[in-house]
Length: 158
Image 1 (cartoon, helix red, strand yellow):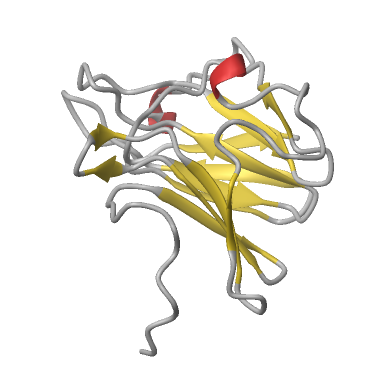
Image 2 (cartoon, rainbow, N blue to C red):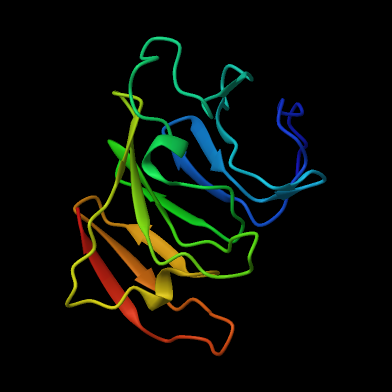
């Protein structure tokens, strides 16, 4: 391992992270201040990080994570298809799992809450699920809740 320069975000665990090209995106987690709703992008080649928590400088009027209901949480999972990032699940400060998913449009720098099909239970989107994308869809596997672990596989058509 080689340590990279320290990003301008607080140390944390339980955050979500995904790589798009040469940029890492990180959301949430647990910091010394408690549950976090921070959202950062960090360039691996340029070595700089940008705080996107309250939006982008070039799009100040577009919806932020908070605007669409993505509240501070930890144990979130993230995946991307190169055009947008999907953030799922997580655990709230009330220690309950969030059964929801959100999209962040990379080029447009805006958030949208995804509408999940009522025919698909979103229980596995709570905490600690594995999420990945093949470019055309997002798959979620497993997860946990206060009462048990899951072995379900879900397909989120995006």
